[in-house]
Length: 375
Image 1: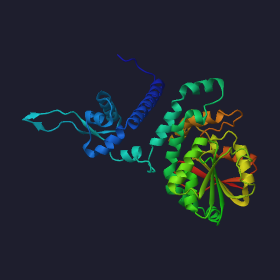
Image 2 (image 1 turned 60 degrees about the horizontal axis):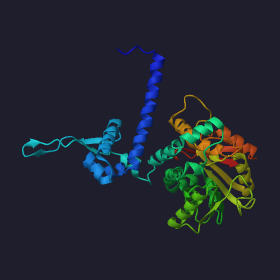
Image 3 (image 1 turned 45 degrees about the vertical axis):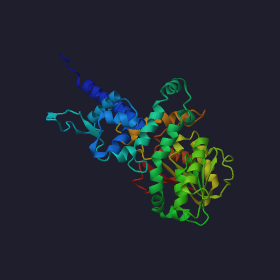
Image 4 (image 1 turned 45 degrees about the horizontal axis):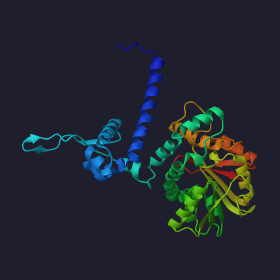
């Protein structure tokens, strides 16, 4: 007989079980991604595949493939399309279930250019969780786990997650704000993209404003090398250039002269920077008096509250495992974390000499919000 459980204990137990299921099912998604099982299911189409067929087509083991397919079906990520196959010489032959991806799954899991794609988010969180032993040390003794240590999967997944939005929506988003669009449309405008990463935001700016000279700057060498490769592959090598520099050091931005820039952008990067006030002070120095400064960051609530929505829950997860440890790996860091609320940005901006911060009327751009820092 199961003993009676206090109502509060039962509710909390249910919450922990739900979290346990989420963790386990996310790990199952990682398996399907890494082993090529989702791709094979997509290729099979609505007819589906048997566990044996999935294993044979991906060079994996049938027993594991069957367990995964059943788990994915129970979790609702894979559909069962057939359980009994035909007749053989008057006998009903039991072939076991066939499995297929349900409608919409392929776009979410496998299409890198889809705005609905979520696999980069899965991969990025996986990269952070993989550092758990090092994270525990940092949590106990201080310091952090830097971007270089978290590794290429985090770098590549962040770039892949933002790429469709930059390529497909950034130009129209900026064009919807006339004052900013007017500055960016100046012939020969100089635009700097700080924290450019693998360069997709820089290249999107170059595409949207072909009369401008666009420079992407990042402190991470491998990201800048990838950005240069992306520029070559995109045919934009002559219109977008990339430099390795520390945005917090005014002299390190190499040839970004004071008062020379028509516009400076920081896309989903300020919250990662150890010294955000110094960065913003450098930005203020490099932009023209009639230029614009735009920061794009997570669209979280203005104040902390225990009733935070799913976006806040997700951003806290990335903060715990990636953004905050990366920032705190630099001694003296501000330690902003992923959940950078508007009042925090306003404080940083004020300390850097900006008189005010305006939330721009750009909606529906993934889970991001755009701010203009007035000069």
